[in-house]
Image (cartoon, rainbow, N blue to C red; front, side):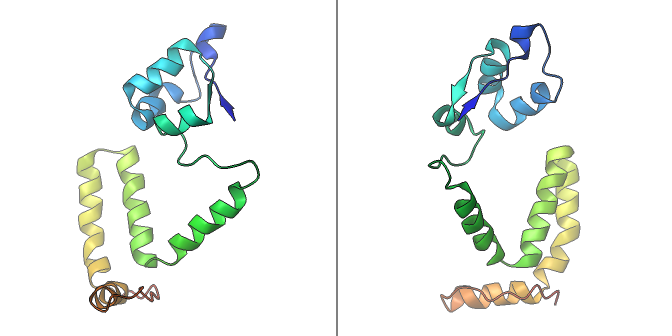
Length: 135
């Protein structure tokens, strides 16, 4: 696997969003190194800078994606949905907006059947059996 953000080497600015998404996702130093040098890098470097979460052997990606999806599906559905929604707000807004959205979601989550099941499964030291029940 090879990566490259080559626009500056061709007299262009990265107009697809890399100039503002890169520093947020990869950190300023990592993003600037590759945005300003047009240097090519491989999978190990992509892993190091946080561009990818794992490096797998060729052809193993689908099996691993299914494993991760199954692990997510084992979690409490309302909590997964609320976590994803809050992360999306935080990504596109201010921290204050994310906190407000989280505060609005908490009563529904904390009062849910899944939260009760989560507490019971913790005390009983067993995996949770979640239903997506709102309470």
